[in-house]
Length: 196
Image (cartoon, helix red, strand yellow):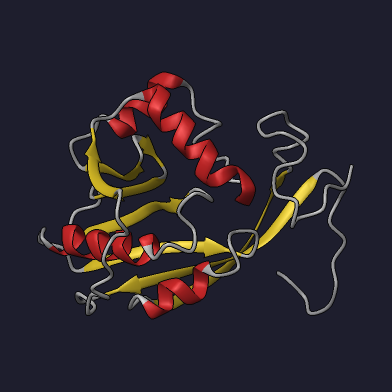
């Protein structure tokens, strides 16, 4: 049981408030066009590509869940026909990650959604979300869901709500600091101070 008040967090740990959101009917699309030179692409699963884009999109926000997986375990997820991967490419370089997971019958999880710094501020996020909503609801689902946390981009929660998601659950997550575990460089996630 969690009591009110402040609670010490041991050095070497990270703590975050996780907010779960859902959409139970297709939300109106933003109609956000892509800037010239940016293209939306479906990606055939490839470990090297995935690990690269996952780190380039997520290291600033301390994304680690997929870095912890062995190649065979990660490929089992990415190679599942009910897991779809997409990106936005600019000047021949992929700069976004959209992962839709349909493995739970009747649902789609927006498993990963993010842009590298090369696309932030271009309106590409709105376009990518439009595609996510269209693709998710093109299948027979009852719910599209996503979660974000307080060490993710500070714009994420409001962005998801503007996109039509509603919060329905909140949790506290505590884990080892991935920078001290060697999963990410020590300068990753500068917004979240490293405490040894």
